[in-house]
Length: 292
Image (cartoon, rainbow, N blue to C red; front, side, top):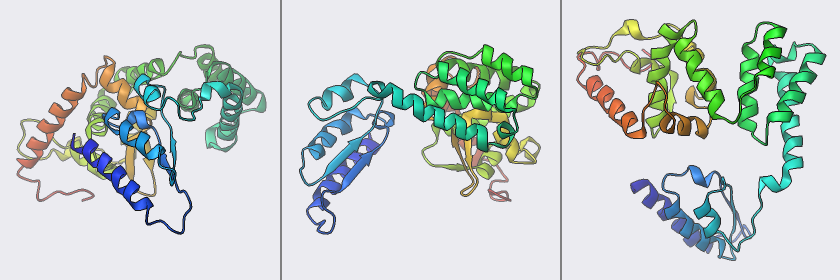
């Protein structure tokens, strides 16, 4: 509730500050992915008030949630579904760019690239994230026939690709090793309120419930192996060293759909609490810090 209250307070400060903006005529306030805000319903009313202020222009993006649609009823709106042809063109541009610029994909024969483009466009249904998941899978294929088989067995929607990724983590060749790494990291990334660095996640891997010291043998020798273990469910910013879930839908999937990693958001917080209590009680917590 505190985050919602602070969000409303920020919007109120913005509204109050408009009166003092003399050099910018009708500034534009952009709110991206409103539906991904926690308890966004409490923010909608304040946003509607901002939209009615003639001194400010408001641009809000969101998925089509009924309460958000109802709140903004009567205000100018547009739906991506009304621009399906343009969306398909944008997805085509994205696929083409990926096929030309991602190292492994760029080396594929032109004929195979054309097949990939055609098949993905046919089944994308306006979902950039779905397309990216399939391109990530194709990136792992070692042979042309493997790519063709993947294209013949394209999943429906986003849940199925995530199901396959989780199954791959748990049951693949590296399941016994990668599974625990992925579970710990996805747990933290689902429940954290602040960005996490690879080194910080690697230190979390050393926490062993019931043990009074960090177990360095549980950490990875190369932090890039954390990315490999989590697959397309995470993304990494080389400039900042920050690792995050690759898309908000990954978090939604992990906390709402039965899987072997997380049971619910309350389970996430309970496990994180247990890890951190164990960490605080570790004898060596003052001796080993992030990056050491």
